[in-house]
Length: 115
Length: 114
Image (cartoon, rainbow over all chains, first blue to last red; front, side, top):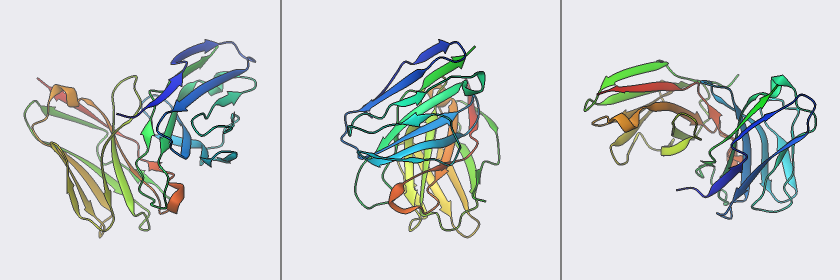
């Protein structure tokens, strides 16, 4: 069982609002990720961090930003939400080491609806 | 470009039967593959993984087969149960080394009929 937590699970906000999706993991993993997933569709990587103070954009362009000040915390922020941002956002983490096969563990997801 | 796709978007099986979910990948340099199960409203849950130096790996009621010649991955679930109903995703790492950024396929919905 993975110890990775996301809040809020569900959020409905108005256009133009600023929101932050929280993600925390207690496994001491150095790598953390944010994926975006529309209903019934595949997951797309939007942000990646391989350690404190390191972040990278993922494969799918996103207007969101992330920060990694602490190992266990990887929040995602939208400065001005739009209806096109409506989606599920999944946070994930994986362990350290040089292996490219470290298992990625996912949180339960944050469903964002922008009206 | 790189892609991972599934042959069957929906698979319906009878309870107790074996299920086989297939996945094709396009990046021959990928050296790590994972199957995830995602239940409605939840995040993906790790099922089983396999490295490219293996052809087969077994877990509890699940087996993953890797055919590198045709770039094909399959997940076999023995004695399928109603609790196995979910969307199943395969993912590959695209051989992006220690970054471990996975490329996901589109998913297969497994529906188990009682």
